[in-house]
Figure: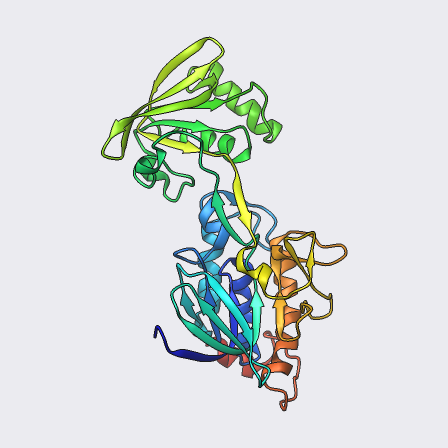
Length: 343
């Protein structure tokens, strides 16, 4: 399909939970979607940063993992046949004479749509790399910036570096699987939840994990496989066995090319929208989820779901201006139930 223009009703930029639920809401009003994401799979930050970490504030799910939520959303939107384009970043967006938009990606795929929905979370995000010489050769083999499958850490000598929630959460979650686990932080104070800090300190007291106050100095290993990490500590240099290293130095969020699309921004990295349709300053371009801003905005997944529902009603009027929009409930409309394959 590369080099050819795909014509569709809506292009959604971002395949996180909010972008995925937008497929559902748009599907209910008969709009076909193509979804583009910089990651290699759906789920956005949920799948990338905490696929196995529980989320507690999704309605009707007292607890669900980031991957579980993604899997359920993919199942929910399956009837609408959205097409996904992964490992691509949108580099260009231009308005055409007929009012539609041409979207171009860095893989040179081109899409033409009446409506564009930006559901890109914080933009394209990259983990911050520790300033350690030669770390690149270990990345993806024994140095990881996220935990995708916990089993890959079983019976490993794990070193986790960081003082925030990610470092503490994975210390607690991986300890039962590890052969050894060492948590490294430059201070003996942590930014994470007090409960997590207390649980971590209890594991240290019980001799189940080690805590070292210090910083990464250099890595030892060959062929991309770590054997030891070397640390600088107040007591001097030390070496720790390590076959897996998880540095949690935070993420760099970049708005990326979106900042060049002529949209009105808030504080330079959020897109201003109205609260009726969640439309940007450019008619036909909408922004939902963490990337948008309006007075009273809450960065919650459920807020993004609400924004997607209202956006879809407005998108229908733009994509099919001659059609009357009749609001229907999935519980009572046989037409909607047929679309969902449950009638």
